[in-house]
Structure formats: structure tokens, C-alpha cells
Amino acid sequence: MEYILETHNLEKKYGRFKVLSNLNMHIPKGSIYGLIGKNGAGKTTLIRIVCGLQKPTLGTYTLYGISNESRKIINARKRIGAIIESPSICLDMTAEDNLKEQYKVIGIPNFDNLHEILKLVRLDDTGKKTAKHFSLGMKQRLAIAIALVGNPDLLILDEPINGLDPEGIIEIRELILKLNKEKGITFLISSHYLDELSKIATCYGFIDKCRIVKEISSEELEQNFRKKTQINVNNVKECVKYLEENKIQYKVISDEIIDIYDKINISDFVIALSKRDCIVNNMQEKDESLENYYLNLIGGADNV
Amino acid sequence: MYKLLKAGFFRLKKDIIFWLFIFITVVIAVFTLFTHEKDIVLDTIIDNFIMYIGLFIGIFVSIFVGKEYSEGIIRNKIIVRT
Image (cartoon, rainbow over the protein chains, first blue to last red):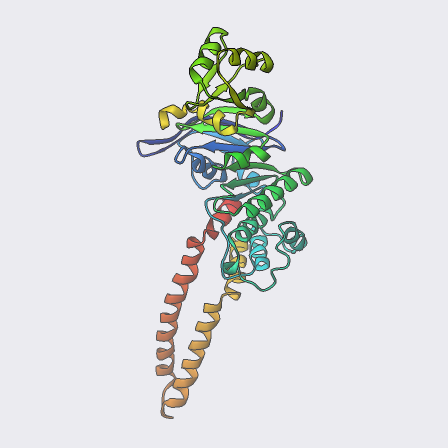
């Protein structure tokens, strides 16, 4: 598989304080890579290092196969677009002028694609409105538009949906999917909204305690999800007895609800329970969510 | 470097405070010319203006450059052009 970005044993220290250590990450071409981790796990530091805003203490990374120690890394960085922390836009200028400035910074003499990009992020009808009057969603979309100037192959978005309303989140999500499919742009997205991320990402990297704990593709992840059946009974004691006798994996959630992780024959199960004076009130099959997987992986119990 | 300068000038042209300060300095210049007595030497006029221009440049540059950092525009530039 071809990787756009690889890091090898990356380490970053602030004084004695370690932020990243032995970090290995691989971003395949054409994927949407979701970077998941706690606050302060080192997501933003990692992204800042990749963008060249900070230097790693130890270790190397390669962008498009070019090592960060080589001088050609400057050319590689021209092919990435990034939004880090907050959208970096000039608030006194209109959307069009903001884009024009970025064209000039990159050094593209004409503004050929300008309206195309504005149309893509649906900001083509803002006219003379300056960016300070934009809503947060519009600012975020403008920031993506700025990052798109110069046809990058890799877009790095640091928490792109923070503070957006549901509609804004859907807009950003659709924009990301559209860009990924139509233009083949690879994405690196860090986010706390696991549900949202699970709708778009094709690859996940879980970052905890300064390193990548696990890298997994969405297909592998789905296979890893444990299916569970949640049942609501009036007599938990009897039900637990039955489950113990038949060696079925279970977890008692409350004094009415039990999660069963093994596959069971439902009609046999209900009949057996009713013989023991235990009535099943309701039964649901549920997928384990990304959230649960994440908590299991980084040891949610330790962090509670 | 030239590209960054070009982008800077582009932003300067769009800046309201820049045009406002230019306007104010011109108004002050015209005002002093008309209010002074006729036997005034060129030297004193220039001295006067340099004082005002220096004052306005001081205020303007700190706002203009500071904005670049507070709004995070500088990050875009560093990423593209390091």
C-alpha cells in the first residue's frame, strides 16, 4: 500500500515533559484517517510537527516519500493544506479576498480556480460580506477553501466540527466525502466526535499516552465490534443463574437490564426463563459503538 | 519572500485603518499649511509632518502585524512556505 505520510519513532519533548514518544503512524493514499485521542494526548502536536510548525526532538517522518531531514520537504509541504486549531482567515476581508491572498502567498499568478473552490464550499453567494459576519460553519468552510488553494493531495483538519450545529456538521461531513471521492484528496482528521468520525473515516489511529496505540481500518474495526443483545427482564437473579449454567458471556447493566455478548437461541432462551418465573420484557440487538471500542482500547476504566 | 510581500500589500490595500490613517495625515497636512503664517520655512513643515507620520505608523503597524498573529493567518504562510 502506498503511504502519503509515515512517521518513524517520532518523539517530542517540552523540557522534560514528553508529549510524543515512539510514535508510528501510516496514512494510506486516498483514505480518510481519523485521529482519536484524549485532550492532551498529543494530537495537535503531531499535526503541528507534520505541518512544519514545530520540530520533532527525535525520529523522522516522510511526506510523499520525502524525509523531513531532506530539503525537498518544502516542496512536499506545498502539496498539503491544513487547518490547525482555529480557522486562519482574515476577518476584515471577504471570502473572495481571503482566497486571493492565499493564492498570492502560494504564488499562483492567476485566480482561475477561485470561483470553482468557492462554489465547492458553497460560499459563492456571500458577495461583499466580510468574514467577521460569517457564522462559525461558514468560517470553517472558508478555512477549508483556503486550504484547498493550490490543489493539495493531503488535507489536515484539526477538529473541524468543534462547535458546529448539527446542520453545519452534516455540511462539513458531506464536503469531506465529496472532496475525497471526486478529487481523491487524502484526509487527516482529528476529532472528539467519535460518532461523526465513524461515519466518514476509512482508517483510524488511536493515540494515547504519547503514542499510537492502534491503527485499524474501518472494515477491520467492524469485524472487531462485538454484537450484543440487550435484554430487559423482571428477575435478574434467575436470568443470571441461567446464563451462568449455560456459560454465556453477559454483563449486568442495572437491576433490569443485562447485555449478552454470545449468540443465543432466542425462543429457547425465553422459554427456559419463563419456566424460572422470569419474564423478558424486551430485547434489542445492538452494535458496539466506536466509543466503546475506544474506551476498551485505552482502558476507559482507568480514566474514569 | 516576494510572494509574501505581494500578499502583504494585497492585504494592506484592503485594510480600512490604513486608508483612514492616510486620510487623517493628509487632512492634518493641509490643515497646517493653511493655518500657518506665510513666512513659514519648509523645514518646520516637514518636521511637523514627520512627527505625525511616525505616530500613525507606530499605531498602524502594530495593529496590522498583530492581527496576522492573533487571527492565525501566519500559520497558513508558514505551512506553505517553510
